[in-house]
Length: 151
Image (cartoon, rainbow, N blue to C red; front, side):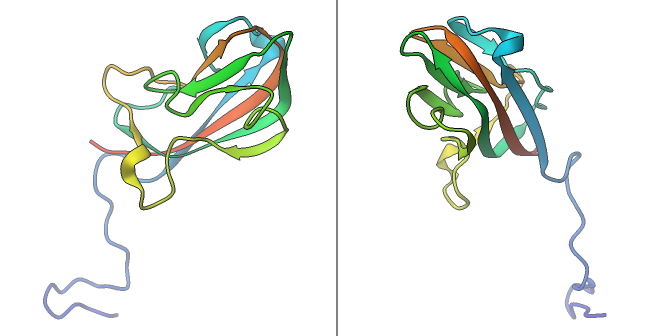
């Protein structure tokens, strides 16, 4: 046992957790054209509610079926605002134009605190997609959020 001579604390053990909800958590949300359709507008993706005081620390997108449209559709993703996860981007370019994993605009790399998103008491509790310019005719994607909860 390695004991701190001043505090008497055993330093071979991790410190105890604080707060009512310690630990990092992950939630996923899905959009599927076959279920939701692709009308212009803002709507919530299927998925669970985020808790109050959740702080998003990572956000990524898994495009399973590339979105298509009869026009020049754009898609934005958000939680507190309609585009705080990802700006409204044309489906003809990144992150929508190819299948696979893409890091979203929100929740920056560690050490760059400016982009974190915290869920307040009056904020929406899920992921919103905003389809603009033209309706979608196909597409399926998963949004994964990793978060911590503070008081």
